[in-house]
Image 1 (cartoon, helix red, strand yellow):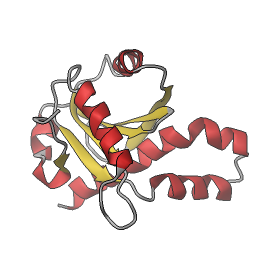
Image 2 (cartoon, rainbow, N blue to C red; image 1 turned 90 degrees about the vertical axis):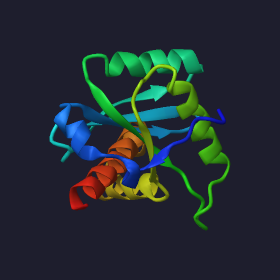
Image 3 (cartoon, rainbow, N blue to C red; image 1 turned 180 degrees about the vertical axis):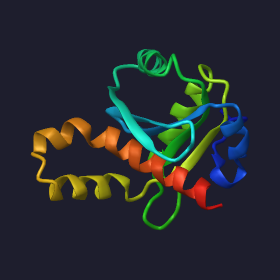
Image 4 (cartoon, rainbow, N blue to C red; image 1 turned 135 degrees about the vertical axis):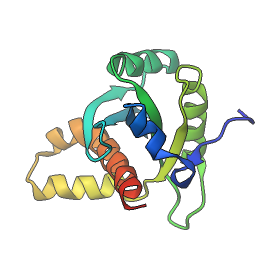
Length: 159
């Protein structure tokens, strides 16, 4: 894992991804689930794909590959769960480990995006939309992945 790292978005050449007609995958990696989102080819809109229940790393990666097998992935953006003081903690180490293992399955750049408020923001919107607790629980991680990826897309589109 020592040679592996997640790039910051500022290091990514988005025009190369757009030119290759690839899409960006957004992941919200948690201990129990992985939320999955994907961009459109214009790099404007993030859409949710699924939530993968984590039951073992190899199985998780196979399910993820199955979700995106027909898509050309140009970049994978991971939610980077910094602590409130801005430092990387234990959750960042877990995401880094997951990303390092996933790099065996994808030959594409990986980047990180600060996700400190993603789940809270998505949860608040769902409560305002009057979704029941059960419905929120089913889509919260996928929605957090959309929130993370949309933030990254918005960053690319303002630079």
